Image: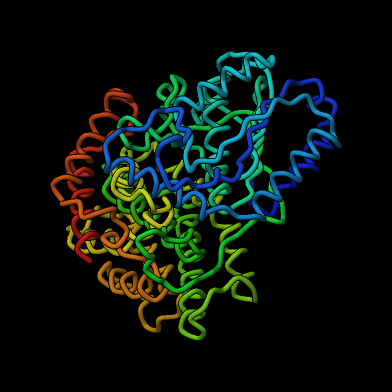
Length: 491
């Protein structure tokens, strides 16, 4: 994918391709503000069914409150402005579909696919389909649009199979938020909420399991509007009252979440059995994302120490924006390139998928990934070093990049250790008001219950993917997940 600075706004893309797009039926998927929160569960509209269990009802109310608090007027204005342009200015043949929840469900994907077919989009695999899907707004809208495109067109292929110019059904993504940009940039499967299992599951089509050498979505275009709705760089952590939820993630949360994903990728690359040296471009991307993420955390800590107030303007805020817009596409490239080398699951993402809906219903996915960072670093610090002669340690290179950008004098030489990374991660997450995992939990779930849910998630994903999909956790990965979970809860 091109860098964010090279991406054009949605309106420009449509204007340049207006002849083709006007002749194509279009499913227009957009995010919308969540409905007003009812104080009673009775009468709440829930097409997937609502459990009569009192605990699950309370969790559902917490989720509704959380979704309402994430509503950003700027995001809604962005969505409405682009919808009006598509329908009134460019006069495309569209049928609307909206999503207000944090994640799509299998039911919402099936409904959207059915709607698209009725409107004239043609189903077909590997380029034989026809039609246009446009996703506008939040990460949930991006995930729903990608899931519908995967189901309808199946334009998924190995990264080794060629370029991104495949004929057939096409997908255009126009994110309005930082989370939306992360979802749009990613080639990984969409994340769907399974309301029965109370887990987040990857949306895997047959084309996903067939492409084993990394994945590319053919016919996909990501656009970028300069008026992205971005969160504050930092805001102080104030424990919510019982009737409230935590606010959405700050930029500091996003930076820590990206580091959690990146460090886990580096760990997996170091533990892989390949004797080949790490690809130079991949290593440079890893180091660049590490530096950018650490720089954002450094800026957030500086603002926190100086003012201890919400930061949503000024030079530091603008600099942090630029770090994200350049780092997010590179993080996506890192995950894509490393996936066919490691053939394992992402420890942070697996923990979130298995536990977030049931045990952390008021917590944003990004905040949960961010709170894993110290526990992951602590777990890695206790693991034996991977010493393959002639092979560069990716974790060590990543650590050097972090310390070189935070200007922690004297720690950028060859003596930098993971223990130094742990010390820094513990300090920076505290300074930038990233909550602990224990403080985010709904109630007080015990470690055995959480581990049991991890095991259930692993078995469920295994049944979905089969033996060759490279997504189910290995025994070592599963042991690491348990260790990271235990250490994170005890911080």
